Amino acid sequence: MTRIDLHTHSTASDGTDSPVELVRKATQAHLAVLALTDHDTLDGLEAAQQEAERQGITFVRGCEISTATPWGEAHFLGLWIPDDKEKTASLEAALAEVRKKRKERNIHIAEKLQELGMDVTYEAAAALAGGRVVGRPHFAELLCRMGVVENRREAFKRFLGKDGLAFVPRQLMSPEKAVTLLKDAGALVSMAHPRLLHAPVEELDSLVAQLKDKGLDALEAYHSEHDAGDVRICVEIAARHHLQLSGGSDYHGDAKPKIYIGRGKGNLRVGMSVYDELMNYRLTAGIGSR
Image (cartoon, rainbow, N blue to C red; front, side):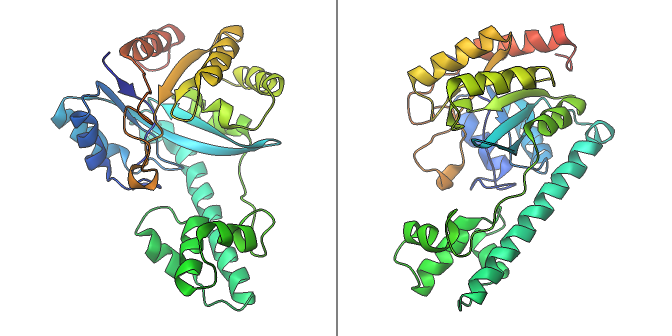
């Protein structure tokens, strides 16, 4: 099987490979198609696209947006995002606001930890992140290094988790807004790893139906964390609502060391037929061009 991977991350967000390194690893893995879908940014796309042209691998411009639902976070991928600043201006502005709110949250977490008597700063967490997206795991690592906790699990239980003393909730947009933003930018919109959302199947089906009306195009049925039953459910829901299927590893490099580009945990199979179906759908639906 000729494999593709339509869900990966680089140092532009929370991955550990630069966009260029990511493309080179995809080439070494003999992938035919690669999408870069960093969280809340388009920053790595130009470098990755240029390297993909040098390497002779088909590249798909993308990004991933997290949203709030009653069952936890739902994530959405924009695929084939146009290389057109005028078309993506509204999307870029919204992503910049998301990044601003993320930084404000991290600063608030640091302030709460300081109020608890710990010498923790946002700057220290950012330094530990090494240029990648700053998050609670970096604060957990700081607490471990300071000897406040023995491990990250304890850090989250006592301080950073939902019931922790320094917890600050994320401010996320709605699924409807994310789908609309990506659609208006000219992207094909896919719901990422639907079965990782802690929603009963009937509630997931209802959410998908609502989002189809907003412009949702596909479900990411094939994912590193989906088992055979999850894939079957996604395929059934997609068929019921006349949606396409997508798939990807959700590769993050060393940040998720058990997930490999193009192969997930070793048994992921996303073939060219998935790409071909999506391309045919794009042409039929008038989303971009071949």
